[in-house]
Length: 307
Image 1 (cartoon, rainbow, N blue to C red):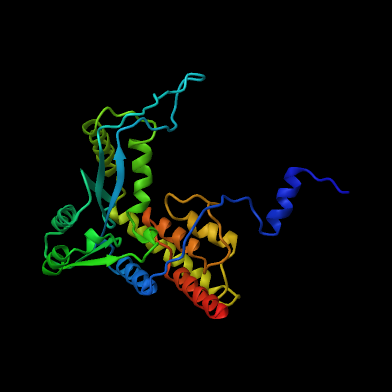
Image 2: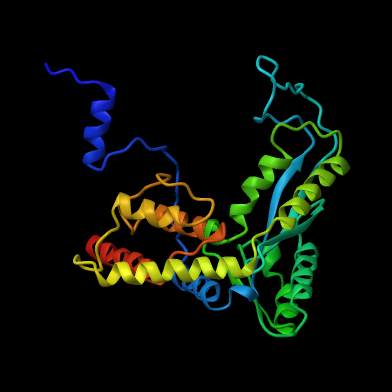
């Protein structure tokens, strides 16, 4: 029997491309138009980033003590009481996000519905009052496909880009709901919805006041595309191969909000890889075109092999 230490075992596995990773659930989209919808979303994000918006509901938001984490004096952690009677009802945050401006705004409503969806789309249209076409990415909630909503969108040159079924990660606003929850809901004990809403809008004001400038975002996208082109020219391996852990980690690490080593997946055809790609893009960065094309070719090749 050969005994080795934990660090030696970790190094041995790392050299073989095996790392300790978190297990997550995932579901592949059954939407027959999945590829077409994703391609359209990618197209508008690449060609018209200053005219692309995202819309979605966040909730339900209830009034109850919520656990979380934060800074506190040693051995004097914050405590929240238990609750068994919740009589305040729930609210839903109807959020709008401008991809080009990196701005997030919205309001709390008692329920989801076509009227509230239409109000959100009108606020998005008001952000670009020039009358030129704009593009709004949103999911397949029935309230988003109401007849009045579609009629208004057609009249005011608003193209509704629906995400595929089971592919909410394709909506850029989803990546911003996590920080919203962390800074307004986690470790809180709001007495009512009014106080909760004030905390939510205080976070939005601070976030938008420190939003990244659009020129900086454009420069980051241009630099990443240039680096990808230089790397692709010098590559000896076929372009249809899968990205390795190291390449995937390095590519995602260039995107703001994504840390090296997170969610490393060897197979580009895996739906989880595409979800991570969209997460990187939603936080302000975009993977270069050559990487996206490589991912798509690998996905089609894998699908053909399985058939």
